[in-house]
Image (cartoon, rainbow, N blue to C red):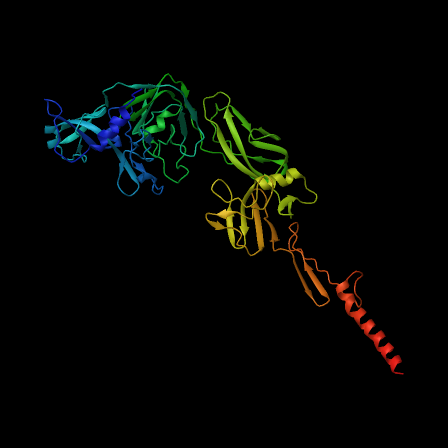
Length: 494
């Protein structure tokens, strides 16, 4: 491994300045940083007749995460931004990378477009040699002064990705370095250049569109012309380009199955028992279909049959048993108008006539909860108001820094679950028990957690004191004693 090159490269970047170019050799060669468009950056690196495009991104701010990584005072490496080392047009389009170059002073002076050249005061570990003809620059194959770095690990491929038709994961990637580019090579002799954001993500994840998927999950349109020919080819190596040069994982044999469709269209149906159909016209004649859903489902031809299926969303996956083509999936819904839960003692539990499994299925499919006038979605970035495992109502739930329950004590809730055609509506009253006494009248109000709006009132009235109630008996005893005294006094006067 190139042990200290990351630190050296970072130092070189920090030393970049607009001072006059320093000659590094008798042939008048100078080193500096240039803003190199992707097409020019990859031109000498690839065996591919289709140029590499700039990246157009509608994703807010990610395209502008261009900070480069650096070595900290304690010697640790701090990663750069998602688009480290790139430059853009200021409006969402990533144009290329800012990378070291070597060029003669005479050629630099003759350039019509100097690519924002900024001089370096020392030779970098890796650079692009630049030649000039007719005032136009050509960028050669990268010069790696320390030699290519060999990586271990392996490459795995998936044809089901939110970000393209293919996604590969590389288990070992360059450490302590920003990744400026990636080259994927195949046994068929074609190579593909990858770009920040659309193709290159952190942790060795690389994806690209090959003509089937038109947009990735953030809504960005995939540029697939450069990558279309990758379908059906076999990856042999993946090379990362950093400021330290090349780092390559080789000796791979990873097949890219031919994509036939991005997804399948499947009918919706009713929960319980029945069947639904899907569109299998997308499959070529030599696609050997094998379909699967989950336990209790069978797939034959273009029909999915099922028994005892609970409400919810399901996924059909069709595979080619010959291995030539990619898997294709399609989601579908089975629905029910039943509500298998009820509110009891602070929780949602199985309603009368339903099993614990029925209630558990409702809980795990909860998609949103409305409290009063506010609706809260569930999921990874949502708010958990009903615990999907226990059904407990989380009275301390927060949306950001705001309490979901405002402390008023009385709340109307509406719980929506995927596969259930109607929400479950109920009310909670969490106010404490209160007791008031007025004269001989006592009123007790109980707010029970196990029911909605449960109020019990007990009122007791009596013409005589209760046994053992000395506070009530004393006045009567005093009256009786007074009467006896009056009679005795009368007798004495007679």
